Amino acid sequence: MYEPYPVSGPPQRLWRARPPHTVLSAIRLMYAGAALELVSLAFALVNRGILTSAIVQAHPDYTSAQLHTAENFRAGLLAVAALIAVGGWLWMAWANGRGRSWARGFSVAFFVLGTLGLPIISFRPWGGVVTSAGKVPAAAS
Image (tube, rainbow, N blue to C red; front, side, top):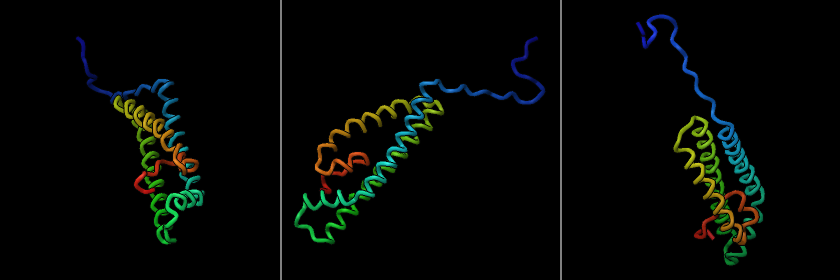
């Protein structure tokens, strides 16, 4: 007689399949993308002087208080955008590592948005430093 389930003994352990090599490579690249976002954020915040000179060129009539406010606003936007990007890449790496089917599409969408956004912000006058850390919206210029 055939028994579909064991009646006695220790519970059987289910083995989780290891992700394919290509998925593991993609996960490593997602972690690298998160690390590069942090590095670019640090670079942009350290070089805030270039950001300040771009604000002065765009708005030469600003007082020192307005300049300080605009500089802090743009630096805050850069920090928030970079932290959201880092969180997104880490979330996608985790989800892809767990085998979530929806995570592949989201990862591609993040990559495409980041790639399409790069040329757009590169042509801005302040693009040199800000490009690597994130976008500064036109409304703040």
